Image (cartoon, rainbow, N blue to C red; front, side):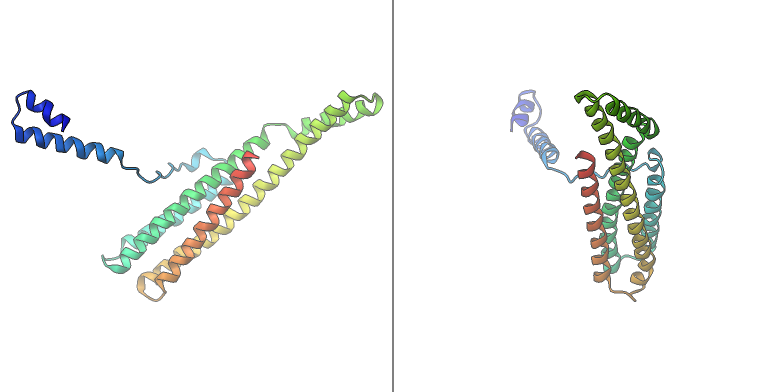
Length: 215
């Protein structure tokens, strides 16, 4: 209404002023409507191994699935597989988040030189043994804590990578079976549930890794 009044005062035709006001209102409403979360931009080459290879494998599976669906004619089955593809893309975004978190954990582990830390610990233990004092004991405990933390993070990294490899195997199996769904020889609803279950496991894995990283 404000836009319409102002433009009318400028000498524009009333009908044109009203139309401009309506257009402005529509634009404002459109920008105010909340949109769903944007999927992260995936770039496997920003990751180190094994995370880069795992992400590339997941992307390859996603492309194969889209190629299978893209070659289908329009129809209810194509619509169902398009919906499954949306869920699968969500799963790929979860793989990316897990791989990024795993790579960040590895970066934290790589920062301290384990050999140097172990050498410092040996020296600190000898000093604490020959000249007991609270400061020497605190130094020993600090170095031990750093080594133990690095060991826990390494274990978490190995377990996360193993879990991603397992989901990659399962994803490959689902993509291979897409041809059966396309031909109608496999149950589409059951197939969709399997994709959902895989995505749920990826979400749980991502949450577990993020909790470890922020602990």
